[in-house]
Amino acid sequence: MHITEGVAPASVAAAGALLAAGGVALGLRAMKDEQIPRAALVASAIFVASLVIRLPLGPSSVHPVLNGLAGVLLGWAAMPAFLVALFLQALLFQFGGITTLGINTVTMGFPAVACYYLFSRRIRESKKGREAFLLGVAAGVTALTLSFVLWAGSLILSGKQLAIIVKLSLLPHLAIVTIEGIFTGFIVGFLARVYPKAFEMPHIIKTRSDP
Amino acid sequence: MSCTTHFSGHTVVHRLDPRPRVVATLVFAVLIALSGHYRVLCSGVAVGAFLAMLSKLPIRPLAKRLLRLNLFMVVLFLLIPTTSPGEPMFRLLSVPFSHDGVHLAAGITLKANAILLVFTSLLGTVELSSLGHAFHHLHMPAKLTHLFMFTLRYLDVLHHEYVTLLRTMKARAFRPAMSVHTYRTYGYLMGMLLVRSLVRSERIMAAMKCRGFRGEFHAYHHFHFHQRDAVFCLTSAIVLMLFAFVEWISGGVAR
Image (cartoon, rainbow over all chains, first blue to last red; front, side, top):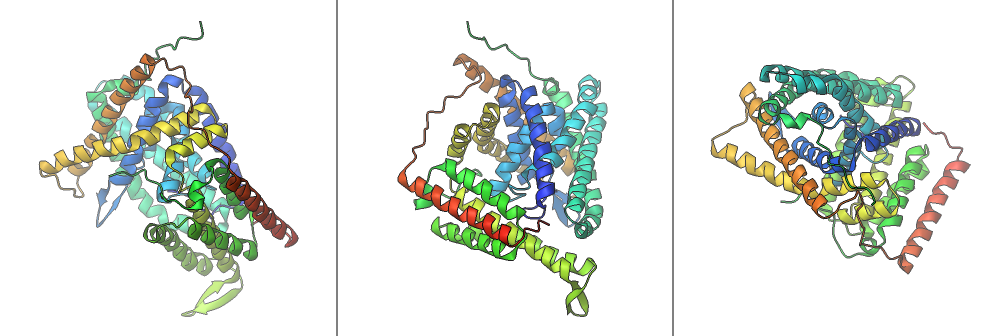
């Protein structure tokens, strides 16, 4: 669900870049120095997963996006994390692109932040593995659906003729969203049982300020 | 296996200071994205091809990237002109290809290829940690640069952990299929990868605190601006201004 290089005209690309810059600035402010390693490691893990994990679907397979999970684990820090991850993807594997980096960061990052507000606390307070699983499913489905809407919106804004791509990809995306939901559910359920600390924002040890 | 490799080499492009390369790539991408004229777009592709030759990019990986991009463009060419209304430019098997649609698809294809070529030749050839240092010297927010460096540093580590976990699964005769079992197993694999990442991030933080980390990295890698960098800056400034000028006299019609 990337906007490829060249597709977005200047106006859409600029709007995306501005929104992304705002979101990333908020994310950087929310992210304490102590949380940088955590954000980086979660981003790396999700980056690796989205590249190498192939979830079988019929004769084909889909790769997970996991932006709902990123939001639940990182909060606003998911914005800069996605910026970095998407930049690296463009550089190393030619997914997305630099002129569309802003749009793609918005498409992936804002749904993640929405999931943080919607689900993070509920998952933390969930008592049973089953409840966490269901909340995970909801987070995965919500994030990817929102991403799809943002993606489709920016494509249609880029050119009415591009709407055909949205129409054709509607059905495949339904399948992808379903699988993403189930997958995120299992991950969240697993984390809730094995390592519930994952959903707490890290204990911040105060760095000593200048004496 | 490493997934964070750049196109290494010893050409003149590789020896250039990364800072002007970052800036030149960004300005180039913006100009090309803004452009609406074939002469500018075609010259952009030509500049890209020239830089790709100058930096001696390996043929096969580059061809793979170009192919992946252009497969999508073929789809665009088949979809957009046949579904958008307007004067038909030509008919293929009695299917009309509209004028506007063909131009839109052609513009997108040229833009994407030009930017891909320049991006890969100028930035794909920088060692990734040097790119982090270049961001630092270009005054990007410190936290963002740190995040970039950390993500880069641990990508391979986590990929390695993933491979290890997958191997243990395979040793227990795991075979992916379209089943809830497969999704659950992959989910637990990912969960375990995250647990390891989170635990590792705490160890990193503790280790950094031991060494008196105060939210600042000291870049000890300083770049030196040589004569060749001045030449590069001058040339790219001239080329980019030429692009802007041609765009302007052709009466820029940004799409």
